[in-house]
Image (cartoon, rainbow, N blue to C red; front, side):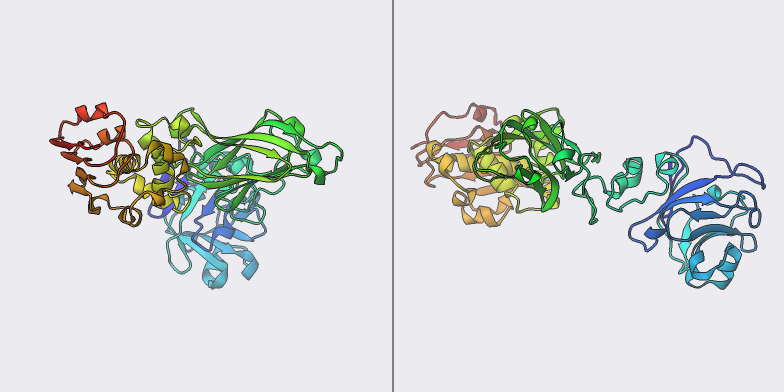
Length: 482
């Protein structure tokens, strides 16, 4: 159960709340508090234990933080408030003295209360000594309180007890793209690709990442044949996986990884490089990289394949964002979305919509949420298919060599000279006398509001898409002289 009052959040985790009314009734012996990252109170986050079971001040317990910070929660009967104070800065052992003296030792306080148990004020606002409301989350049950005490969120070390949603998956410590600390991922891997790698130096990585917002890629070594003339750790090939400039996995490669896989957790839409540094001129390997569960289903799409023989090798790719897969899966075979074969559809997706790693995931998501996204996709595919002869498509290195300047520099399709729109929907497409020498793509049928289509006097070839027969709004179709 999580209660939100003002800016203060309370995670109770129980099916009932007990509010003692007199000394001797049920009192919490330990609770955990996590202050918001945007405050200066983060160092006071952690478990607070009742250190006064034999003697209490004003009949209430005094709670001591279990880290090196000497922070204390205590009640002052005179002021009828609970206070958080730093005993190391003042030497005060009780809340009343800390409240009376003030200064840097006084950290925070609550509204007035007569309750004997601090749990009663978890739902009340907390304020800093400067009277600013504090963002704080209280926990009185669960693994973060029972077994996670003494462990810090956001310290660069992935703690299994804190690796749950309530604690932001240990403050992001368990995933490469969310961990922000020098210790992130270091020395965490002893078992990878179904193999004990501790004897060959272990590895760095994030196998405990549980954040559901992450995508997964999988590396399969189909074949490994290494020079076995030496057996030092320096003689093994070295694997490094980097996504968005962050190292996600490093380890030495051994032959028994043959035909085994390893899963890597990456951010949605990541740009990644998988590199192998060979240790010998005789090392040979073959690998396949997959994008797992694409489009929200259990599909595994092959991203790329690589062969390594006597030289280093790297594969660079960008994941198609989740939003794009969901939008496009009814119109393309998403299992083939990464196929090496160049097609107008893949060129539009990778070079135009995604931008080959030049756009942030925020920008990509914003464009995907455009209500005219599918129409823009269909328009771009129709243009590329018509512009380029089919035999020339594999030789096109970039869609920038195909699109006119107005399409490259301006994503507002309704402003393009050959397009007319009504309320954002494409109603007219005029590409007559435009030097078109390809084919008319079936994607033109996705332009459901189209009333006129002019493709005449070009060098188009191939069949006329049957989808044109389903376009109920189409009034004018000119495709003669092709």
